[in-house]
Amino acid sequence: GRARSPPKSRRGRSRARQNHDQNRRHVREDVSQVLEPRRGRAKPFVLLWLTGLSLRITLLSVPPLLLRIRSSLELSNAEVAALTTLPLLLFSVAATLGSGIVSFVGARRTLIAGLTLAAAAAALRGAQTSAVVLFGFTFVMGLGIAAVQPAVPALVQSWVPKSIARATATYVNGVLVAEAVAASLTPVLLTVL
Image 1 (cartoon, rainbow, N blue to C red):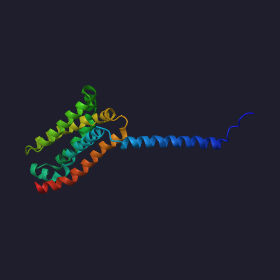
Image 2 (tube, rainbow, N blue to C red):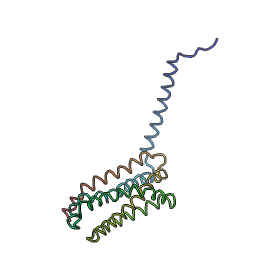
Image 3 (spheres, one colour):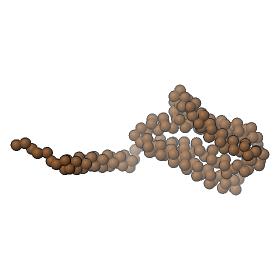
C-alpha cells in the first residue's frame, strides 16, 4: 500500500527544525559579512557617525555656556530660552524644506551644503558680542542642520542598503556621543581658555 504520513506533531517538529537550521545558516552568513574585512566598507559608517556628531555638538555646547552668554550679552530669560529652542523649532519647520532640497539636488549635496552652513554659522555665532549676531547665526545654523536631517535616511539607503539598521544605529550613536561630549567637555574647555 499507501505510505502513511507521519503524525502532525512529527511533521511540525520537522518543519520547525528545518526553519531553525535555515535561520542559523542566515545568522552565520550575516556574522561572516560583519567580520570579513572589505576595502572601503567602514567608510560610510564613519561618515554617518561623524554626521551625527556634527549635527548635535554645536547645539549642545551652548547650555553649559548659557550663564556666561546671558551675562555678557545681558539677555533676558525669554531670550535665553529662545536661544536654545530656536534650532529645535527650525528642525520641525524646515524639515519639509530639507526634504525638498534632498529631492532637488540630492542627498549627498544637501549633506555637504547643510553641514558647511551649520559649521560656518556655529563658528560665526561668537564672532561678535551682539545678541542680534548670535540669534541670526543660530537661525542659520538651525537651517543647515534641518536640511541635513532628511538627507541621512536617503544616504543610509544609498550607501549601505544591506545594513540599514546598523548604519542608522551608527548615525544615532554619533548623535548620542555628541550630546555627551558637548555637555561634558565644554565646561572643561572653558577653564583652559
